[in-house]
Length: 173
Image 1: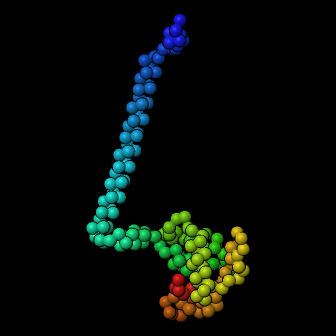
Image 2: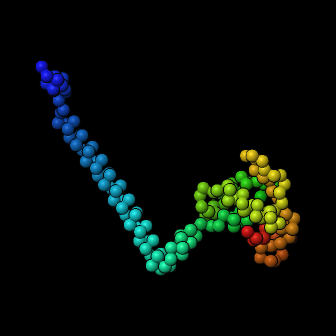
Image 3: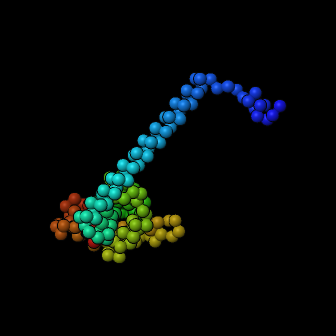
């Protein structure tokens, strides 16, 4: 007896129900893949139309890049500045990030801790913040709002310190 005859003899026959179920699974899988491919095609065409519209309106690649980069997000440094009055007397980068996330600011997600740290350092350099404890390793630096910053309102009016007893941070970043 040959090996082929032996396999056929031992193989179990497929019933019509099994055949129809398998055929239905193959068709359903192909239809799902077709839908996914169609959705991806539409997404790519929409992106192409957006880019073409920007190029035809703005003209240069640099103009398009700048426009796309600035759409739909709130500047992170501005978000940091706005949450400072709500911070405790001493705070660190984790307090800032938590408050920005809780405050519903439309910033690019996930929030990059390096960007927040850079904004805090710029505020320290400009005198808005004072360094309380320098960070080391994984331990973040601790800051407090400078006393001079408490006396200045971002609108140039009477400070909120005097109005409500709160801290005001000038828009320097």
